[in-house]
Structures are given as structure tokens and as C-alpha cells.
Length: 240
Image (cartoon, rainbow, N blue to C red; front, side, top):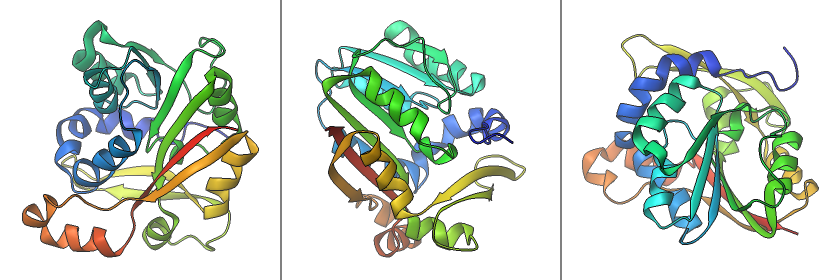
């Protein structure tokens, strides 16, 4: 396995259809991370947006509906991109690409906003994607990403130490009839923040997500859990 091997491709090819159908109704996705990253992004009116690791196109759809001037979106999973294409039609430019590798198909200074929703977690070495995000952003460009919160992921994955970056695996049971093993990386706080600063971004905000109030009636247990144990973080950064 190379440093940035695409560890989760097989899993997401298997999950694509069921994930696209169910994620927006899941506590962790539709009632926590989805509203959180959209709230931090705010208005996309008139912006040229790159959606990195777009999955089935949920965020691209919402950014276009929010007035984005254009959206380009990529994912490593062809199955995910086929679903995104069905959802978005010709409103977005979609292409297969690996976030762990350079993106020569994208021009310098070509985007106002880069977003990545729970996608960087699957890349071990962030230096490559962050350098590419910096390259394709304009001088006033903005990066908004969501990632797993180290506290929550430490409890979930139980790596040998809370420091550093560790390959882990999780078994997902809520999307398909059969469990799917999804490879992932646990990442400490410093392994999240320092690469962003090293890549030339300045931190504008770090937001620990919480479930929206609507979840309290739908799933009180998940709501209580999300209000006491952080699951995700949204990081807002600009070019320094």
C-alpha cells in the first residue's frame, strides 16, 4: 500500500446506491454533518466551487440551488459519480479523480471555494490535496472541510495511541443488508490542523458539530449522543 492508496474505493462502490438513498435520513449525516457544513459555508451565490470527494452529489446540489455560479465535482468512485450525474445532470462538471493525487485537469486560480465533506478522512497524506486546493483557489479563496472529530473517532476506532495518523477499519451495518468494512484513518488534532497551516491556509474557524433539534423527536438516543460526544468538525480556512 502506497502512502495515499485509495483505501475506501471498494467499500464505496458497494455502498454507493444505498448510501445515496439513505444518508440524508441518517442521524450522523442528514441531521448532523450535512446541516453543519452548509451552515459554515453560508451563501455560495456567484461562487465558482470545487466539491472534492463529492459522493452522490448532495452538497453540489445544494450549492447549485444556493446560487453557485458553477460547480465542478469529483470522486474516486465511478458508482458514486453515476448517481451524482443523475442528480445534477449538466448543471455540474463531474469527473473521476483521486484526492490523494495531483489534479492536472484543474487550472490555477480557478475556484473561489473548495469544499470537502467527510472526504479527506480517507487520505493519509494531506499535503497533496491541500497543495492542490491552494493552487486552484483564487488569492481570496476559501476552503471548508468536514472531518471526523478526533475525540469521537478515537472512541470509535480505538487506535493504539491518540497521537498521529492510524489506518483503521469500521464495519457499517446501517446501509446495506450485509455489513460493509470501510477502511479509514484516525487523525489527531495536530495532524488535522498543522497540515492546513503548513499548506498556506489561515484558520478562520473550527466548529464542532451538533445534531439539529429535529433529530430529538426522531431519534432521542442519537440526539443525546451527538450533544455530548463530538462526531465531526467543520474547518473554515482561507489562503494566508
